[in-house]
Length: 250
Image (tube, rainbow, N blue to C red; front, side):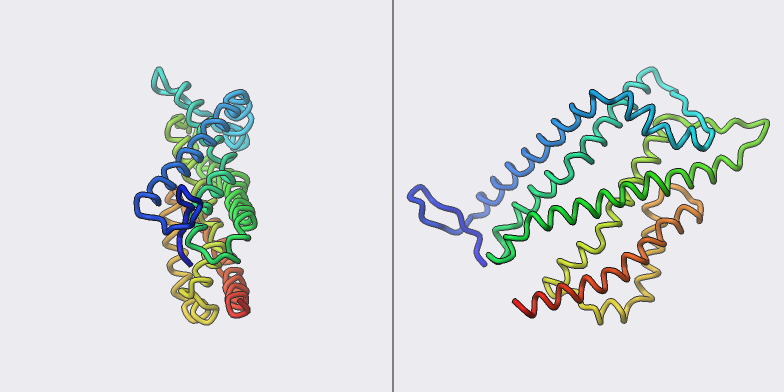
């Protein structure tokens, strides 16, 4: 398993440290280019993204958002368009990442790059969907219940953006647990027996992670994020077992 590239004569040679840096630079450029292109695409639908996507959970919870700075609305649109571009370009970003890692993989493992990109993207987008459709509405309804006749619960736009993006992005990263487990198992760092033995410790870690990732201090939102993490952990045990079988077979 050697990282090699062809030289000027077409003969394979081992990649140097600077070759790796150059490869990484081009992968980053391509990933950033994908984000720019998809962000421009999202710009054409900025009104829909802001009015019908971003503000929809607020309307469902009967809450209003307010802008406290002159540039607040412009910043709101820029952040939404950029985040939408990042989500849409996720498969490209992951593909560039795995292509950078591919030279360090075994030849038979390089054939699975597209499958890896697909399942990693699906896990991330599933987490995004869970955060948007479950976590965000539940958290907003929970906080809206504390309103009174003398106090209006109006949310500052920048705080709302920070809240919803961190919650959604955190859920997307959490849903990558099965894929992370797969690769750690392939590398020999994880085994099904190890995960079963430390299940109780994992539950504590999951509760801590849900508390850190969730930008709200309420136990309900944290529990909603912890619940799928516990399920994903159990799924990851089977994923680890599957990865170990494939490693043994190869």
